[in-house]
Image (cartoon, rainbow, N blue to C red; front, side, top):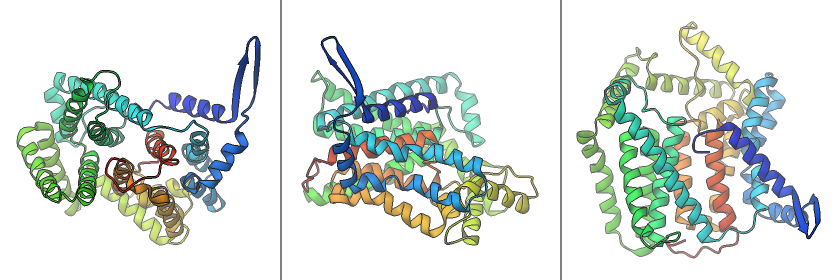
Length: 404
């Protein structure tokens, strides 16, 4: 998932479905393969927990819009990307109940994997320091093993996970791991500023802000919010002064936005993003109720670019999940999507889990700037985090405390 290996994702999803539907029993020399004995019970549990059902809404939006989409090939491609929304919720329901140590272990390995990945990225950056900084000055990202935006979102969540692990006093085997966890978390926190991907930084800061507010509310330590606000304001200023990649990114963003406001930035990365959002909003406003159909969105985008820019600008899909859904399925689809997104968070007051809340903050605010769940990496990240949380919280009554 972390490196967007589509083959691995497909195999993993296939195996999860197999385990959800079938079982292998070995009794001495007798080996029996057949349907799971608890299949009906799992279906009943799946149906009774509406959060699992509503999390599948993105798949059904594409499926329903196929009735007014003319491009069958692109519709099938979108359905393939969204298929995990349909089958993974049941696969997770069929798993044994997840206990807190198991969930924390998953987060611990996420922290370690992202640390290794960031060390690799950092070594490559140092080996090509001048060349990469020059790329950043032209709007290019520091090379990462996968899409740099999704990578930064996972990195942001890994930092939040490290904070949660430290708070819980977690260690896998040795007590010294309790000190390793904050060291790795601080390393990742520093590295996300070196990586300087704005989407990841913004959602990380927002997640820290919201979790700090929740912590202050539950513990009545309101000075915490003030300290966090001060840090969130001062850290970017300090980072700008000390980290070249961050400074290059900020300078480029300011210059690019200036080109956009002057109408001359259509060939630069940020301006291309703003233009794609304008096109998405235009398409949605032309078909406000039901959109053009998720399957026809790509065709409509290409046509709008040809009309607006005389074919001299490369078409870009709207750089916003909200605008993508609005243009493809209209206001009706957007409202259904938002309902499906927030339902698991508020179902049985599961927002009381601070980590589950922080995860949704990261995903939700990424939707403003990115097509987060329009590729395998984004879908996998969203479903893995969301379904792990749901499976754990399904049988946990969340008290109004910060620990949960």
